Structure formats: C-alpha cells, structure tokens
Length: 413
Image (tube, rainbow, N blue to C red):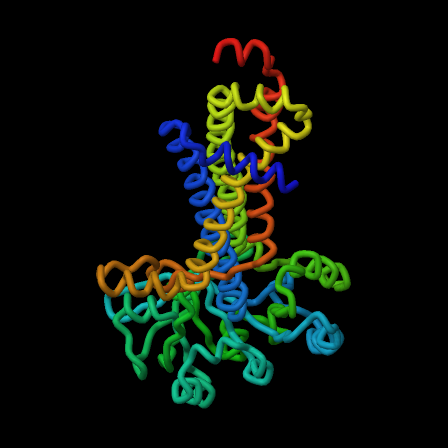
C-alpha cells in the first residue's frame, strides 16, 4: 500500500503535470466541497423549520379535534374527556365550541374564521396562555364577556385592550336559508401573537357564552387534543373517533396546517436530489482528470508494466489518485457545512442587521428568524455519498490505464 501511495503522489505532483489537468482536478475538488457544504446547510435549515413547526406552531394549536355532527353538541363529553385523558399519548384534552363570524367596530369589519370558546378549567396545560400577558389573561378570566384576538385582527380593526367589539354570527335555518345574524357585544381583553397567518384568523371567548350564543345544548361542541408526539395525530384521531357512539367529525393538524410540513418534506427531497446531482457532476471532473492523466502518463505506466507491475497495482494507483480529490473536497465541504449550519441563525441575524432586510417576516411566517438544526446522521450520509461517487468516478480511468500496451507506448515515446 505504501508503494501505491508513493506512485499516486508521484503521478499527482510530477513536474510534467499539465496545467489544464491541474485546473480540472482543482475544480472537481471545489465542486464536491461546495455541493457538500450547501447540502448540509440546506438540510439543516429544513430540520430547523421542522423543529420550529413542532415546538412553536404545534405547541399552541390543537393536534386533533373530535366534534359532534349534531348542532346540539357532543353528548356526555365529560365521560369521554375523563376516559381519554388517561391515555399516555395525550398531554391535554379540553372541551371547546368553535364558530366563524364577523367582528365589527364602527364601520370596519373583519372575518374571524376560528373563534373558539374555551373552558378555563381545562387550559392549565395549554401553552396558548403563554402567548397572552399575565394581566390580559387575568382580565379575560374575570370577565365572562371578554375576548382574546389575534394580533393582526387587533391591528386591522384598530382595537385596543378595553374596547368593545360586536360579533356577528350567521344563522342558517332548516331550509338552508340565512336569517338575521346573532350579535354579541364583547370586551377586548388582550391579543394573542402566535405568528404567521394564524394571528389574522384566531380568537378566544368563554365556552359558556359561545355555547349559549350558538345553541350548543350540551355545553361543548367537541374535544381538542394535544399529544406528546404530534405526528401520531392522524392515526390517533381515527382511533378515538371510532370509539364514539355518536356521529362525530375527526380532524387533525395535518388537515389544517399540514401544508407547512409537506412543503418542508418536499423541499428536503428536492434538495437531496439536486445537490446530489451537483456532487455527481463534480465527480465527472475526476473522470476527465484521470483520463487525461492516463494519456499523459502512458510512458510511465508502460515502464511500470515492463518492471513487473500488475494491473491491480495500476488500478489502485489511479483509484487512490482520484479518491484524494473526493476525500479532500468532502472533508472541506463537511467542515464548512457544519460550521455554517451551527452558526446560521447568528450569521443571518448579522446580515439582517447590516442590510436592513428581513429574511422572514413574522406577519407571514410562524417564525421571524432563520432556523437551523444539524443532524450528524445527515452529515455522515452526505459525506458517504460524495466519497462513493468520487470512488465510482475513478473506476473507468483506472481500468483504461491497464489497457496500455507497453511496447506501443514506449515506441511512441
């Protein structure tokens, strides 16, 4: 093996090394390094978005809902709540009433697609209250006619804490015709700032007032669930829903917010494919480099053969010579990718500060910073892909070197 390494080094750094071959060799190394760096960095960004989706957005919205088909509400919901709360997979379960309507202040109106009536006896584990100030929450808890509204709704209606706002709820008769809407005057107790589009859609009021206004006779329209692992919500909600004797609807976060998770997975797959191809293209430069090196070193290869060198030795020499490019490029790319991924949030914040440009707006996205989470399994996988592709690229030139006829090569030389 020592002889193989010495010959590979001689062929790589010989005085007769063509300048163009050196350029192609360097470009292959740079291409592999760049591909590895960008792949590790972008995968870390996707991991960061997935982590923030789970820790931020999914910490505040329900992971699943079961609600009654009948307008009278969910029957015997207290018994179901007690039964389901013993399930170890569930972190919290609470009753709710949900409505959609219009909010009006003066001549300004704003649709509120998700106005939820909550029971204060069951919100101890609800992280949503962390998004409301202590004073505002106390005001809401002490006033049965209070309402909490998303930040964007507050801004669009120019509302302040203590203002009164009129809620209009549509009424549908048995023949599916609309009648005059029900109106309720509510006191604005505070705002909720979750982030993204939810701030323009969500509001909370007391469950008793919501049930009385909507005519929910049982006191609750349904149950809302949060799980230790939100990604089991789809299967768990089906399991729970089929255990009810009453006709119920089942829903989970993948139906309402699942597009965010699907977008992350789609981008991850595209990144994998696109940047693996970039690394593959860089490895094709290794083929070009070694093919030209074989042509340039025909005489030296012929001398080795006349001295008794076997084809196996020559193959190993050129595989090692080409693999050096792949290994150096991979190591440089992995180091750069890891350093950038570990410090991406800080780097992005610094660029935002000096440029005055915000990469992610909290009004549009559920976070206002660029997240990153490095996973070493993906780093190892990326390095393995790059090294394997670079080794595969050496096979053809190495075997081509064994086909050289010593007599012909030395005669031409």
